[in-house]
Length: 137
Image (cartoon, rainbow, N blue to C red; front, side, top):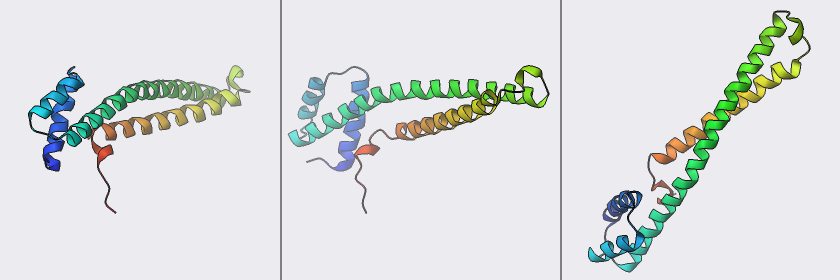
């Protein structure tokens, strides 16, 4: 049985190869050729598969957070325009409390939530195997 550091290096190596398009059967074959036992081969392939699937899911989350931030900026700008219009005594803007304060509240909420989600995604990208590390406690 290989040590944990050796297994981690193998996981990183074959994760890179899988991202480049290598098939799981070839990964298994190469790992068996390196003398890795079946239990460890299965664990490595399963963790690589989980990471690949999670990356695909994160792509959709990234596009969602980008859309959230764009809409957040649009609502915030609209809210600022209507709020400034109210306080500069422009006739059209006087009775639009919903557009001024509502736009600001919704826009800032979307911006805040979008940036939090983006930060969370960035932290997960720093170590793709972090979800498999066991916490001691």
